[in-house]
Structure formats: C-alpha cells, structure tokens
Length: 131
Image (tube, rainbow, N blue to C red; front, side):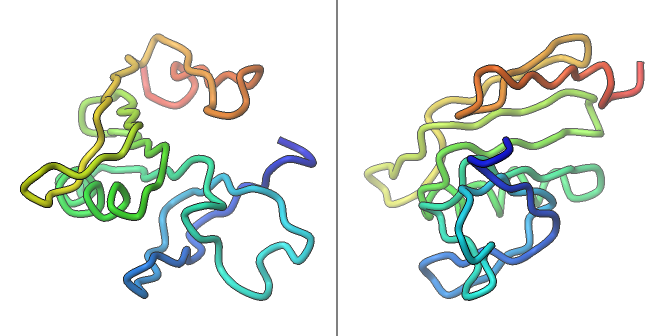
C-alpha cells in the first residue's frame, strides 16, 4: 500500500451519525497528518475489516447496515466460525429505508482474494484460516 494507503487497527472511524466504531482493521487513504487531527471518515476508507467469531452475528446484522448507511464501499468479514471471507460491496438503501450491500461474495479458505483498490495485492486465505 505504501504511499497510497495506511493500515489502521482497532482505531476509531467517524460516521455521519456521530458514532465512532473501532473496526478490527481499516485500510484508509494516506493523509499528510496521518489522521492525527481527526479520525478517518467513510470517504477516506478503502476497506473496512471485521474479524468475527463470537461477534459474527453482530458484525453481519448490526454493523453491516451501519457501514452501508455510511457508504463504506468495501466491507469484509473474516468469518472464523465458517472459515471463509465474506466480501460486501455496493452499499444501497432499500425503499423501506433499510441499508445493506448489493453484492456479497464468499471466498473459501483455499482461495485468494485481491484487495479492493490494490489489484496487485493478493491475500492467500489458506494463510488466514486453519486448514
């Protein structure tokens, strides 16, 4: 990621409803002040990652619509219960007012996935999930 982005771990982000969740990992656009003045906002976030075991249902049902409403373009859940990666993209608002993601793609533990915005960076999921 180098000069294009920075990896942040369990540090706050700022959403429009004045909440400041602390996702497990965030890949955010680089800024000169390294986010010392304020936390990353949705427009700064290239990828938001949650690592879920006991929190899986909460990450899928509570956090997902919050991140979609904030227009976080890419939301990943490393699902440690089922040993696969859930990739969500294309946030939307349904006519009933609920928020979600149009696309959900599952990557299995023996597959690899490219990072959004970094097509040359690949995550080998066999190194993440136990075999």
